[in-house]
Length: 117
Image (cartoon, rainbow, N blue to C red; front, top):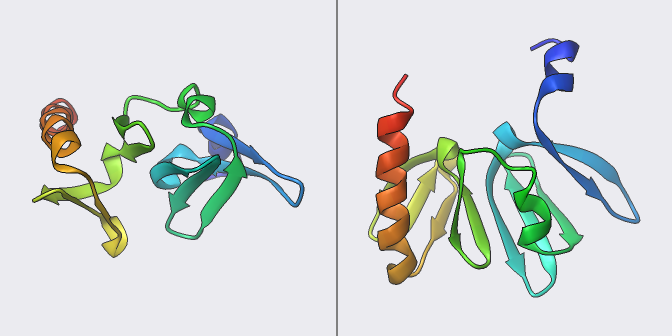
């Protein structure tokens, strides 16, 4: 990918006292909050900053789904779902409560049918 295509890519700006960074949407596995800290999980690292999920939702595209009040999943990175667990590319896993899992599974199935390549 050349420099021009990176400029056009969607990202979330992460600005803290120590750093300023672009977190490209294609790199994100999931985003969660713990207390008032937003954690953006990527293969390379976890970006942390103070805020709310509502602060980042506006940056996201249709690949993302809010499966819980404190968690957003990138369906594009999910390999499979089984018994309340999401399995991501690269071996990362995320457990979701049973109530949220049923609804999220329904949306993931719909996502898979609509994004067949």
